[in-house]
Image (cartoon, rainbow over all chains, first blue to last red):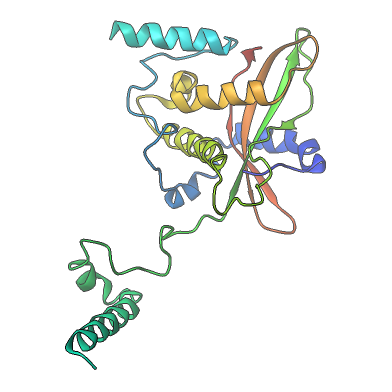
Length: 72
Length: 170
C-alpha cells in the first residue's frame, strides 16, 4: 500500500462511481492473490450471519458481532 | 582430495543441476515428486505469480447536512528505518492491512456473506478501525467511509476502486 498523490485523490470520484456501475471490477486479478493465514483472513460465518451495518459506528458493529457470536 | 570432499562436491553439483532443470515446466512434475522438503528452489521463490497492482486505502467524511469532504489517503506505511533490512517490526502492520484488503476481495465472492455481510467481518472491522484512527475526523463530521483503490502502471497510474464501504458513525 502506498499513498495517492493529491491530484489522484482529487480525481477519485469518477473512479468510485465506476465501481458502483461495474461491481466486479478488478476481480480478474483475484488469481494472483495468495492469502496467508493471519489476522486478515476470514472464515465462513465470520460475519455471524449479520447483514447491513450502514450508519453504525465501529463500536456498535463490534458489539452486534460479539453478541451474535455469543448466541451461536 | 578426500573421499568426503568428493562426496560433498558431487552432492552440491547434483543439487545445482537439478535446480537448473527444476526451472523448466517440463521437468517440474517429476522433480516435485521428490521435493517434499522443498530443497529445490524456483526462481520465483514465494511469488509464483508476482503482484502487478498496488493497494491504497482512502477515507472521506460526511457532515450532518450530507456534504462530503474530499478523499484522503490513509497512511499505512511508515518511513523505512535505516536498518530496516535487519529489524523492521513495523512491516507487520502494513502486511496485516494488505491481507485485510485481500480478504475483503475474497469475501465479496462468498455467497454466504456477500456485500451485505461484509461490515461484520474481521477484515472490514480492522480496516474501519485503522482508517478511523489514522486520519483525524473533520470538525463536525458525523460519518465516514473508506474505499480500497488499486493502481497499476508506473508513470501514469490507472486507478480502480475494488471496494467501497458504507458510511459509519465517527
